[in-house]
Image 1 (cartoon, rainbow, N blue to C red):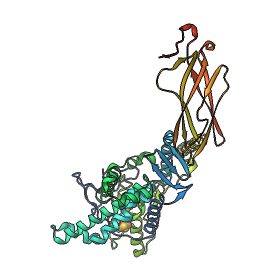
Image 2 (image 1 turned 180 degrees about the horizontal axis):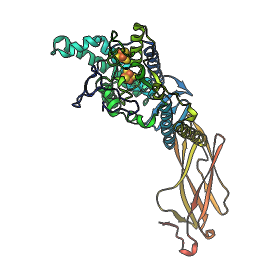
Image 3 (image 1 turned 120 degrees about the vertical axis):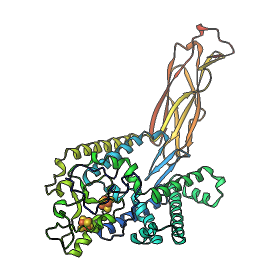
Image 4 (image 1 turned 135 degrees about the vertical axis):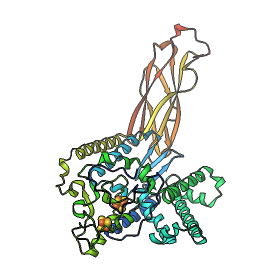
Length: 481
Ligand code: SF4
Ligand code: SF4
């Protein structure tokens, strides 16, 4: 995987410093674990701010209350979902289609414009590794060279305790992340109560917490860049989503080649110092061209800018630019890029469809069902049908419902509870009965019940079933299947 490159830039012959099987996968398919060196610079600082802001937001969302509920709360147990003041229940699951497709088109649009900005700046895999797990590793194992030297030596007491401590801290960080994650699915008071009681009192939640901890630990602490390089489907789609005008992190081959040592005459701007390679978290050499393994983290930009500063040369040998720009061509404006127009139109359509769907979403559901058993009974010269009205309150506050039967000649509609309250996001089943003189029955007929709540009304319709007196002599009580 490490050698799959997008065939856009002319590839220079492999430089002598380049290790075969670039990236974190060796030519034999084994993992070559990168030990990225520390780097500082404007992009690293900016990314750090974004990472901590995202983590703070993620940890705060279950605490922030909007409309009396957490900003994001997915109450799977009661099938109620709260998103920034809006409430949804299981009946609204179809809206997910719009949310997922909208996110997909949004990501396609962002990718066409900004390349893998998501990977480098906002993907949880990058954010957690760079903001939490990598600093832990640095703290315990020291910088790249120290860690590399230690890794080459046979295991010793020193390396064993450092490795043990590193992984213990990883597990702690993963457990913390798992608890925050769990807070999105159980309420905060409930989570607090769970933490204070023994795991046996809430085995399912405990199992989820253990599973999430294991997942975060393996993904951020062990699997790391391999997730981006080998598993991530979004990474695999890059060659389809971006074109020569998308913003990427790229090496200016025209300016940098032929690379050579600082003292070499006739060399390009690249002094072949390898700094851009050793800081790369996926272990690739950006000078080989745009690669699937590049998560656009910008570390190599800062590393190379630092080298250029020291040499007194202009910054930007590695920079954010389009592939067209790196070739020295003019970047096309966004309105002359059909790909962007198509993604944009699809995104706009998705947003309009979502708005319409949200707007048309009703505050309650009302459905009528026939009571279990025979469709009708005969009793003392009357036909009788039994029904059940299923009411679902989709609002985040209790709601009062009023049930009124529409006038229908010859039938009597008996609703024992014509006014009732349904809890927030709750549901109730209300039985009602319809009777009719058997002698007046001439055929099935519609029955309409008018349901009103909070200014919204809805008619639910069912059918009265029976049989005329001629079809059989009525007994005191006779059941018809
Ligand atoms: S950091 Fe810059 S100068 Fe050094 S090898 Fe990379 S591209 Fe060349
Ligand atoms: S090549 Fe540069 S931008 Fe891409 S992953 Fe490596 S360091 Fe980050």
